[in-house]
Image (cartoon, rainbow, N blue to C red; front, side):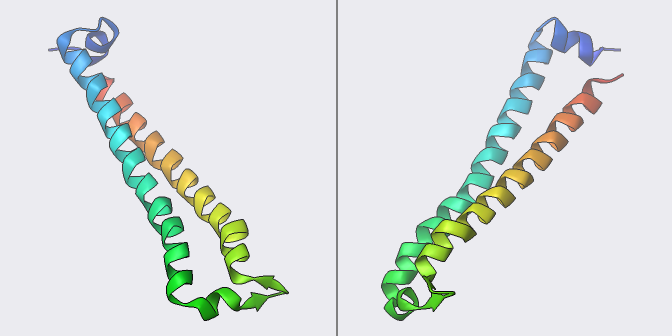
Length: 101
């Protein structure tokens, strides 16, 4: 029976493939999570250009674009960061479970 933990520690071909798989999974997760804020934050100027009356609205004497860029964007980034950390830890836990005998 092949001991996967030894394979990883001794950096054999099997262990190297397992680590590359983990790195690839983490990279894929990072890219998928990064698409969300890039698309949503990139859409704000487009929406405001298409609907100029929305750009003129004010809530609590602050214009909507400033609220979106100054408050909502931070909430979006915080949510994406939380989700990334949670899913990355799950990937690492799956890898650890795989290497345990």
